[in-house]
Amino acid sequence: MGGASDKHAWWKEAVVYQSDYKDIDPSYGTLGDVDELIAELKKRGMKFMVDLVVNHTSDQHPWFLESRSSKTNPKRDWYIWKPPKFDENGNRQPPNNWAQILGEANSAWTWDETTQEYYLALFTPEQPDLNWEVEAVREAVHDVLRFWLDKGACGFRMDVINHISKVQTFPDAEIQAPGAKYQSGDKFYANGPRLHEWLKDMNEKVLSKYDTITVGEMPFVRNEDEIIKCVGQDQNELRMIFSFDIVDIDNVPGIGYKMALHPWDARDIRRILTRLQRLMLDRNGWNSVFIENHDQPRSVSRYTDDSDQWRGYGAKLLCMMQTTLAGTLYVYQGEELGMRNVPPSWDPSEYKDIETINYWKKMNDLHKGDQAQINEARRVMQKKARDNARTPMQWTAEAHGGFSPSLAASVGAPWMRVNDDHAACNAAQQTGHDAAADGQLSVFQFWQRGLAQRKRHKDVFVYGDYAPLGEPHEAVFAYRRWSDSDAFVTVLNFSGEEVAWDIPADAKIRRYVAWNYGAGAPDEGLATQGTLRLKPWMGLLAESDL
Image 1 (spheres, one colour):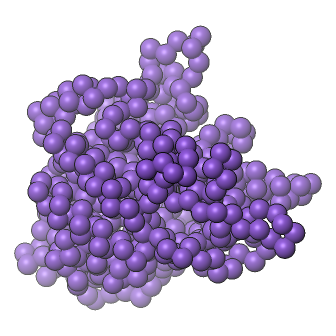
Image 2: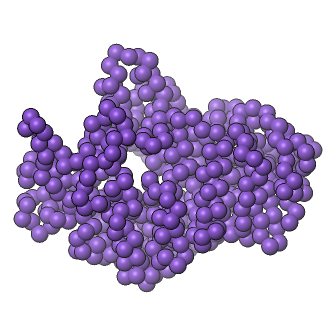
């Protein structure tokens, strides 16, 4: 569930079944259930948003089954088919050297034995890419949009929408990872040559006819002009996009390998967020604010310390940061509880995601007999795997975290084992926490207060101006937000150490109003001028003079 704090609304997100864009995966229910859900959401002041995947379909989609049936089928060109190449020894090779996104050791092209050609499947062989160059494909997608908007959806999260336009010569990617057979081809499919033409067309013919919210998932895009073309108020494309800078913070620079632990500190967070905050304010765009989703590890484990001692402080620190940044805020399920990554003790067999499985296989193939490398690969997997965000939601301390309370032991478990800590970290425990008993808010209660404060001061936190404070600091990220009538300062210690931070004069701190070390306002006489001493993982919010 995601929150649109600027509109004072919440929405429920549903994933459209990739085998049939106008139906729901039977394991989740029926279209009748969707109608009931939309009606009940409206009664509660909530909205229904659809997660739309139209860069690719399932290989079981009727369109693809027709396309692969023969070279003469009318839907053959609805997907991207190419003949093989052959090396000097006569061995069949893919059309180019593009790597699969969810398994860079593999080709992005899959061989079809029946028609003796390759089809492009950037993510997995089971997810063939649609050929948006074909007008009938674009019209079919428009028809899908109308179907869900007419049903009552308020808009769409558009999965990897910036991959729909490919450079039509399909050239080899440059060598960024020496020694690897396949290379990242994002230069030739991320924000491709006809992307903006097709987004404008989609907006003109469909989206502009409804009151819609749209957010485009756009990995790889860093160019500011490209970003503004997508989200600028006068561009008529999308309302906002998910920029990946903050969730790529520990990827390998230049290569983009996700399964890595590249070092970073608060200076990187400041650089990334300041660039995006200022870009949208200066060029009339709109930010999405997020640090967690179904494709990322848990934020409290990634950006802070998820140990029992510090988990709560870290989760609240990240809440304070996000609820005081400009844009539309997206909160991923479990983030509001401080759910963390699975324990390092879990065996690799517990991981179910194809990206993780491909990574583990690659590392074992590359480092046979090298236990130190295998151990490091396992550490990276525990820190970065998407599986961390896909364990059952921790509702209660009961079996499976209360996710499937009626699931009998004889039937088995949900798709994945619940995190071991669900008895100590769950919604029932946190929503029922008595702050008066220990002077602390639960992570959930801290989020409630942060969102309420964001709405109360939306002129500052949602729409207001932004400036970083002080010089870049390896541990401290601080910034000032203001409107015509109010101003606030946020100070965040992204380290497990006590830090002395010199308050810059332009902070103009009047008084502290919230922190993550107690339920009320700070009561320790913290400095408003001079040197401020910050405890480990401390977050502070202060009123500031204009």
